[in-house]
Image (cartoon, rainbow, N blue to C red; front, top):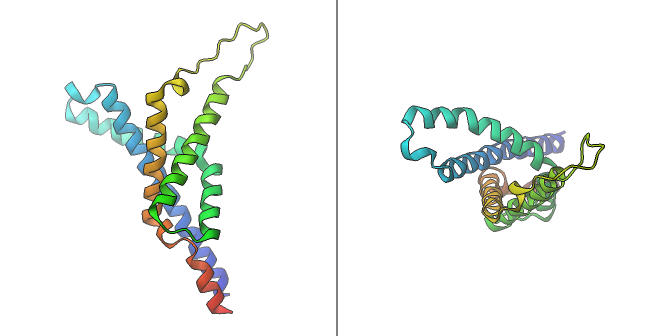
Length: 165
């Protein structure tokens, strides 16, 4: 019974870490995108605050949705291998962002509802190197945020599980 509680507790910590990582990545993405658009230069402070209050949770939902499967693969690998260093989690976040970029590029080239063949894919978002660097940086920030919450104790459940036997 204690082993089940240990694993359930670890799964809860992983879930909280994933949520924190999604919000940290969304905050980084929001700040960088608004800064690149020149929004901070002449905007009143209440507009910037409102943009953060509305934008960050929305972007966090989108981030968590698209990154869930690749992030879970990275999380399972780090848990099973017991990797607890921040660099592994940061690079894992970068890999997750590369996978998400590839998926978004694939989605941009899909021909949905076009029977005539006149479809021109819009890949400006994924072909811009600045956007690629922004998304990779977002993944790195998300990986470090996950490490701060859950990654620094990755694989600890195996030691506790073996002690209970």
